[in-house]
Length: 428
Image (cartoon, rainbow, N blue to C red; front, side, top):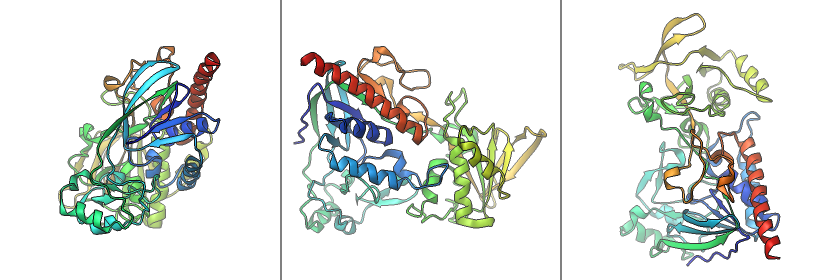
């Protein structure tokens, strides 16, 4: 049974991505009790799935390692993974939260040795790699996962694989009898940091993501470029595994579109500019990138990064909203069709691989939100007084890059601290 010690001066943080983790750590390091609830088996969110940051092209692993160390060292922070908030009752300063915790089937004895995974044969699509690769039925989500504990996929329960995993574990960590449980506890304020999800590319029918294997999304390309990813850093065509040398990037795929997402997702332009560096890194001058764009939004310090990419002779820019993608049946190459607005000539350009810069969709579902909350037409939580002691952090509040998400999450933590401080003052 999981025990959570909390009072109405505790801060509940929902979501353990970079924003939730930041808010939780900042609050805990001021001396506040914090409970962090994350639905994945690990914290870190989508940042853990990035290969590099823009504009410095540095690796996220450094910052992740620092935050994980901070989390391990802070006694004020309780982390619940594979957990979801199912209900919140009460008002600012006096909430009661209910949290459902799914069984991991691996307990705290886990040493991260991986013997259970070696013993298991069954494989499943790897969620961490957006289905581009496979993982075992006993698995560590990724190499830097925190907590560093394996997970048993419930699909293998009752099979020979499950018993093999249990037998292989010398630490006695595999517990196939674990059950789902629900815990309830008090909290004075809530930071909602459930992050974002890539817009469903299947809905952009003219681009054929659901029909053409060699049309992928930018988040999939990010994992593909990572040397620790499913292809070992090789940029290949899903259709035949051949190296892709002529790559098209389509901007605003699902963003700034009344049929899809109304808002600009802010990160897409910079993410694509960053990914052209991946092409050069993997292929040198053999790698050619073509960016199809409405306009490039590179603000503040990102302008220099944009200009550097613009000057690269291996990167081309075509100012156009691609109308449709068809396929060359002979070689499986995607063919982009549209009109270049600089010159207004029609094109039908063939590429080895197409990368859709899909938009950032908030992971806030108003229909299932545990309390009444003010959400704007784009799906983000508004900073409204009606929300009481519930504050949005990071991409629950707006489409933000990592830097701005961390800044905004720190602000959300401060607002939550102010609420519980008022509670403490009233009780004192």
